[in-house]
Amino acid sequence: MTHLKQGDIAPDFEGKDQDGNTIKKSDYKGQKIVLYFYPRDNTPGCTAQACDLRDNYDALLKAGYVVIGVSADSEKSHQKFKEKHNLPFPLIADTEKEVLKAYGVWGPKKFMGKLFDGIHRTTFIINEDGIIQEVIEKVKTKEHTKQIL
Image 1 (cartoon, rainbow, N blue to C red):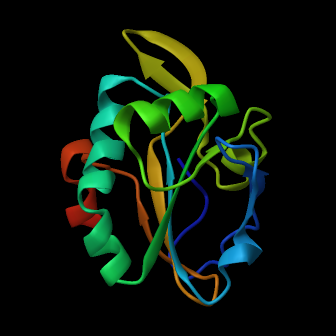
Image 2: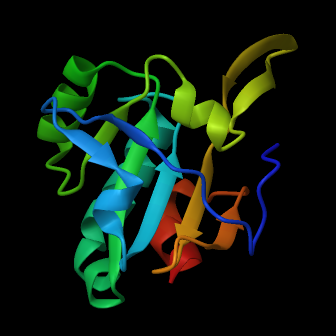
């Protein structure tokens, strides 16, 4: 779905997290970023994915990654999701879908025969120089950390 590929410069992003703090790509200059886009807070697949990242967070940190989740849910929804599952990383509330569109993960989807616009579950591994190192489009929600590492 996304037009971005390995070797591309990762688009800038900016948004509010679950606590109303502004999160920007430039805040992480010189760091490796796991920027993961997911459809919706508190759905089975999204919860499995977030909890896998949570459970393996120390391994991700040891590998030098910061983790940032993004969906179109509100700050309030993110706050409840983060608290309920004790997530140690920020979640950007992209209600205007600016970051989603910049990364090419918002678009037509099909579910039970119906076509609708939504978020394509995709993870971008961004290196210290802001270059996309890897794009994971076939995310395994229960084994996502293994795919990243």
